[in-house]
Length: 348
Image 1 (tube, helix red, strand yellow):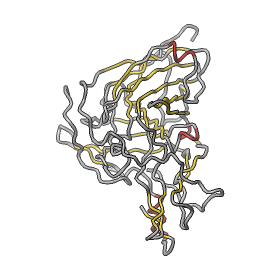
Image 2 (cartoon, helix red, strand yellow):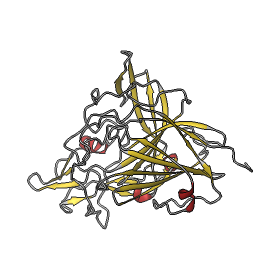
Image 3 (cartoon, helix red, strand yellow):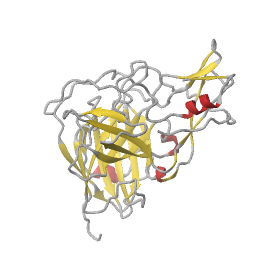
Image 4 (spheres, rainbow, N blue to C red):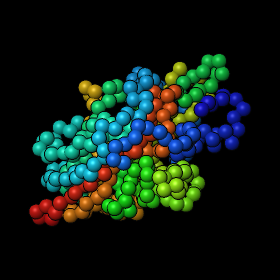
């Protein structure tokens, strides 16, 4: 993507604002080693003052995961028990509260990279909390940094892609497949933590994803083993995002941040999340009300069991992009079939 300093038409500006589900490249049938057992838009804005210069930690070094990793084992069903706590954890990505050390968790696998992901959960009368840890050699905390082309005198998107992590919650019951490898029609509630776009504000991006038999705008076609077609859509919840997209038409520096943090609003601000990276590992804490009152969110209650999956890459049914700092950025999928159990604790 390039931004020209002159002769910019309204049509081009609209195209530049289209940063939605279809903007990252062609969708084709994905290929990976066989498993055993088995659109948001932001209008251009004027430069803010001071200008958001690119971070010194901009990562354009290729991630070591440049293709699908052969699966280590068949997918499994696992249950994560959420434990009651009288004191809510502080959502700061540090996990220093004693409760996190006292409760057991589970270890699942990321689909694309097969890296281990550890999950823990606690809940209060009002909220449910999650602690996530997974390895990452070097953190990627910038995303599509504007990079100046001195010859063309324009800014273009850099190849850097941020680290992400997401939960996908079934809104279609517990007897459905949530993966995209051989999917069934379903709807999912997506909590999408992004190291550049949402982490500075302390939130995850709240979205929903549907797989249906009906084609629709911006839908991605998925071919199933039954030789029928399903269609994938990902839509942001109502409200505003935790970031603002900036556009620059004059030179502001060799590298300038494209995304700057802002306070999210509405249903899109339902999930608080904060991550920190240290010693080759991301630690991320999530918090959400048991019931948000929004029909685009899964509702939790003590005594309930809820189907979900997790991924270290965006679930977009895309192929690897070797030109990006994280080639697997949009190849994510759920791997294990995970169940969250929220018990009826004493006094509830």
